[in-house]
Amino acid sequence: MLKLQEWVDYIFTSIPPVYLIIGSTVIFIVMTTFVYTMRARAASKPIQAKKIILPPLFMSTGMLMFLFDEFQVPWIQVLEASLVGLVFSAVLIKTTMFEMKEDGIYLKKSKAFLVILFSLLILRMVGKLVLSSSIDVGELGGMFFILAFSMILPWRVGMLVKFKKLEKSAN
Image 1 (cartoon, rainbow, N blue to C red):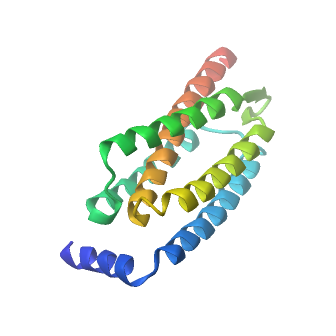
Image 2: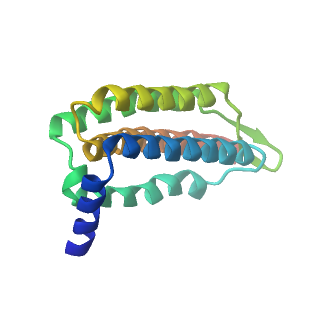
Image 3: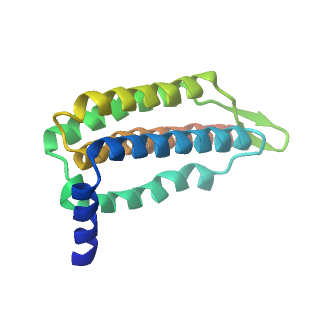
């Protein structure tokens, strides 16, 4: 663990913050494209409960980042990021709909999902540009992780509830 901490320290002291911000933004754009593509593909196949539950479980491994000093976030910023995530989550829950077809339950395509993804991208870029002058890059990364996780977890729980209701009414 100590060696890993030294490696993380080295990255944050030797790479200028602007490059870390640009790199993380590029990675976010790639991940956004990936998520949108996966969601578009998922709409053409029946959905299952495990496909709803697994993404937040996989994402939860990212919490390990908080073992490192560079990513630790003060509690007030945890609260702020969580609240912003919950707002986005509420919109996602409201706009995520399922439909019953003869061979299963399908996720309905939603233009709102793309709008929310782009809004997050813009929020992230503006937030990083504005906040990077007063908040360390690692801490900012931690805040955006908290925002994303506090958006995805309630959204997926909401999806699961809607899915189970539709599944129950179909049986």
